[in-house]
Amino acid sequence: MPKTLICILIAMAVFTTGHAYPGNAVEMKVGIGRKVITPKGGVWLNGYASPQRSKPSTGVTHDLWAKALAFEASDGSRTVIVTTDLLGLSHEISVAVATKLESKYGLKRSQVMLNSSHTHSGPMVWPAAGMFDYSTEDMRVVYGYTLQITEDIITTVDMAMASLQPMTVYSGKGVADFAINRREAKWTTRPVDNDVPVLKIANPAGELKAVLFGYACHNTTLSGEFMEVNGDYAGYAQLEL
Image 1 (cartoon, rainbow, N blue to C red):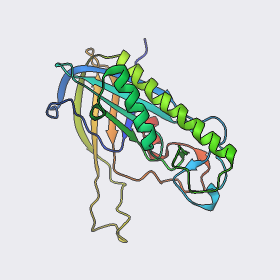
Image 2: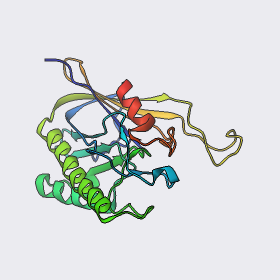
Image 3: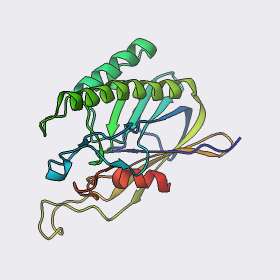
C-alpha cells in the first residue's frame, strides 16, 4: 500500500490531552481524516471588501480541504484538532459540530479544536456574509455551502476516530522569516513571530503519516483582484509538503 501523508495547517499549534506537553516524542494512538471542501461552481469569496469581489469566483486554483487529527493518550483521554482552508468558521458552525461530536463520541467542547487557515480566497460561510448586497439566490448558495461544510467537518472527524492506531508523535519547531508586522511602517521594530511549531506523526514502522504545523502570517499574499478559489500561501505550503 502507498504511504499516506496528510499535511495540516492551523493558525496556532496546540496539543492538549490533559497531560503536560510531550517531549520530542511520545507514543499514543492517532487517527487521520481529510475531505475536499472545494465549492462547486462560482461562489462569493470571503476576506476582501474590494470592488472586484462584487461577483462570484471565476474558477479553482487548487482544492480546499478539511482535515482532522484525533489523539488518544494512554489513559484514554482524547483530543481532536480540525483544520479548514477557509477564512474562518462561524459560531453557528462551531456549535453544530461540537454538539454532534459530543453526541457521537462524548467529546467535550474543550477536547475539540476548530481551526481555519484564514485564506482570503475561500468561500463565504453563513452568517459572515454581510459585506455585499446579495441576492436571494446568492444567500441560498452561501447557506447551502455552510450546511455542507458542517457535515464535511464531522465526516473528517469520523474518519480520524475510526482510524485511531498506535503512532509516535514528535514535536519540534522551525523558522520562516517572510511574515511582517504590518502595523509598523518600517517592519523592523514591532514583534514578529517567526516560529513554525510542528508535530510529526509516524507509524511504528517509522513511516511519516501526517504533519501538523502553524505559522503566524496573514493569508493575503493574493489580492482581492484574484477571483479563483484557493488556499493562499497556507494551501500552497500543504501542497508543497
